[in-house]
Length: 125
Image (tube, rainbow, N blue to C red; front, side):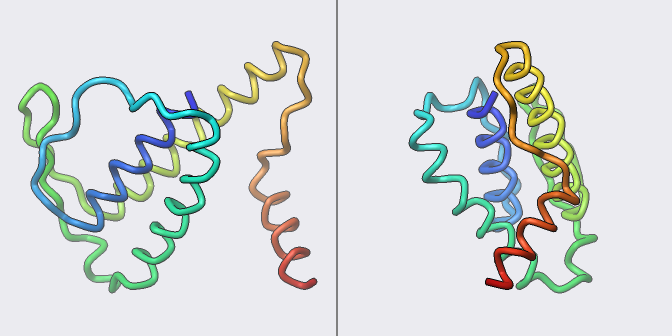
């Protein structure tokens, strides 16, 4: 599930940055180790941040053409890609929390308000 989330974020960020009319990759996510994901993920977050900060608002409504694995052409505005990436990650993060609870592990707090409160405390130090 972590690889799936990471790969989705990676693919859509590449799509936003390059705005190419490519075919979405087929098959499952690459078989990256947990250590690789932990090292790579901050770069994806930074990539989304850089892209959002450098993209004029008017470009958020521009459509990107994507060829789906079944050869269907899919047109989607950039803002919807960002929303999809966030929604997709949130959905699967909830699945991971459920899996951890089923294993008897106390999962981390994934609440967005908690995250912002924690990050504001970190930035004040």
